[in-house]
Every structure is written in C-alpha cells, then in structure tokens.
Length: 277
Image 1 (tube, rainbow, N blue to C red):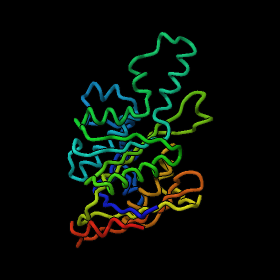
Image 2 (image 1 turned 90 degrees about the horizontal axis):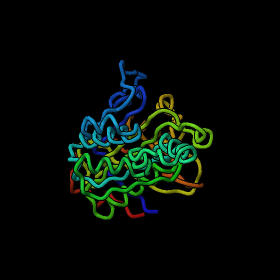
Image 3 (image 1 turned 180 degrees about the horizontal axis):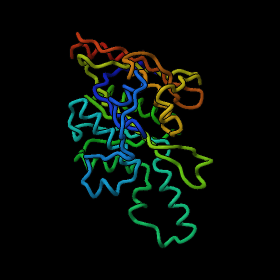
Image 4 (image 1 turned 60 degrees about the vertical axis):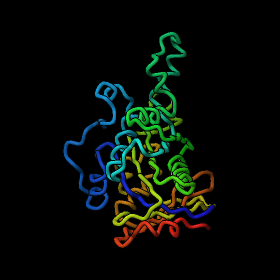
C-alpha cells in the first residue's frame, strides 16, 4: 500500500466523563477530569426535538463531527464524510430482535429506521444540509482504521478535505456476551490535503503484522467501547506527535505517524506531502 499523508485540521472527541477534545487532551497530558460532564451529548446540528429522540450513537457521532468541523473552520455542508462504527447501535438491534420474536406487529417505525448502520451518516447529511457524498463503514475492530484509509484515499483522489467519524455505543441484552461494548465513545477528524500552519500531519501505511499499539490513558475512560481501537491515535494527537499501530484487519495493521505542527508550512507543500510508496 502507498503511504498516504494528510493534515489534521480539526478534532472532535466525546466519551463518558470527557465531553470534548480539550477535556480529553487535558486528561491525557495532566490526568485532569472536568467537573459536571454531561451524561449524553447534545448535538446542535439537530433541531431540539430531533436531538432528544436521536439514539445515543447518533448523538455522539454528530457531536464530534460538528466539533471537528468547527475546530477546522470548515462548513459541515461542504465536506464529504466517512462514518465508521463497529456495530451501529446494538441497543436498537437488541430491541428489533426481541420485538420481532415477541410481537412483530409492534415494531416502532422510528426505531426501525434508526436500526440501519448508516443512521448517523443520514442524520448528519440532513442536519448539516450536506449534499456531499457520505460513506458508512463497518469492519469489526478494524472499523476506524478502514475508515481512515477510505478518507485518505478520497483525499488522494482529489477531495480537498474529508470528515472522518468513529463511534459506538453500549451493547445490551443477549448480544452483550457476543458483541461486548461499554459506554459511549465518538471521535472525529477533519483531514485535508493541504499543509496548514499550526496543524499536525499524519502519514499512514498498511503493513502485514498483527501487533498494535495498546490504548493507555484514554482506555481508562473508554477502553470497553467497541471503538476503543482508535484511542491510541487520539492519545498521540493529544501529545502532539508520535507513532501508533492500529488494528486494520486479520494480521494487518495501520502504521500512523503524527508529525508535530510545522509553523512554516504552506499550501504549496501539498504535492510533496502525498507520498507514493
């Protein structure tokens, strides 16, 4: 696989106890936890009634997506997007299975349309008024890594910037022992082709090896979530630089190098920063 590179223009993060990227970064660097963290995200991209009715997985995905766009100074409606989730919403999947067994005619139409894996992507395009392409990806514990590859390929194919969102919620019912996931976790990146002063660059390469970087500090808050395999990357981003290896499939991993912001970067560096291996 070619080595692909991108600029991280904006970051969004939410997990139980760490309600934004600044809180997550402070926890990684100093061990500080904010007081009064909300129990559930409140995505402002949705109207108030939709915000209350949206599933937790949709709420966390839209919360971090908007935060990343705002940090990047990008209009959400202008960005193509990639939404990566291991399970979608296991709580609704459990509801659908149990209701179909007990009383099929009582299935809620609202919960039925929220049961699809691309529910968060659909809510995002409607709420943001976005008509750009969106992609929903599931690859079990490699979901975020495969989403990152998809976003980078889109940049390499000519997109100026792409929004990448990873998220998962808690499993419930009989599915829990088979598809274990705890709490609520979401994280997002706005990635662009152009070098940008003050923004870190990432270089990504797929390699044949199963060894991955273990989650550390952020794992104390969200290590039981199905999207936890993405946490090492966000820990490295919190430190500003480093190298991590993410699960990318059976005996495959994604090597991601984060370079500290280059304050001398300029847009003309783009062509040299997308490397052909």
